[in-house]
Length: 301
Image (cartoon, rainbow, N blue to C red):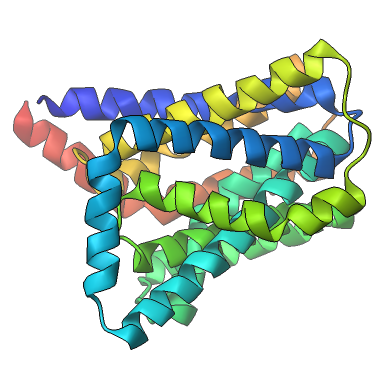
């Protein structure tokens, strides 16, 4: 299959995630926990149906693989799977709070800095090496965060919770890459669905009666969870991580443009300075990858 098909799938995936606000903003008046509960359990319902109906062979293969491992390794992977599921829920809840109760800009910032935070955490946890250029990007990002915290410290704090939780989730997923990613997502959501049942009975509000709530939940589950996951899994089979690392910015950039031009969120001069430094940091962080991709493109032509 042509690589352009994989690239197209990746572009569609990250653009779709960039419009996530269309699913969340119309139900901003509902408690974040209620939105989280419905997203979680409806997602589990559809994922189980899809996997059991069409992907039983993949489930069997993953189970056989897990069963064939030594007990110590199985325990380690089980801990990572459970830990990853809890971190993913932290990310989902904090993202809902940021998007609906703070600003779309803050939600965009989370995923603008997420790749950089992921790299730093990989350096700390996985002992992966960072080039001097990437360290420069990290320093610029820290300066930008310092500027953005002026008068908006709480906004930045929640944005960094979203970014750090997703970065940790990505690092954990790297350790679980021996499993099918779609099966892994279903398993993690099933685990957290069971663990969160006491919270549902304790903190869930009244069952929503407005049709718009259920329309938005279905949009979130289908358009911003299941379909992008399928496309993302397909794209990752045919393009390298460096290409993904560049294309992934379509998500937060789309979000940021919607915040300014669609939702008409105000932006101060100080924030403009901070976001400008973030974009400079992103360019510096990816400059070697961009150069490599450009060089390879010229060779092909």
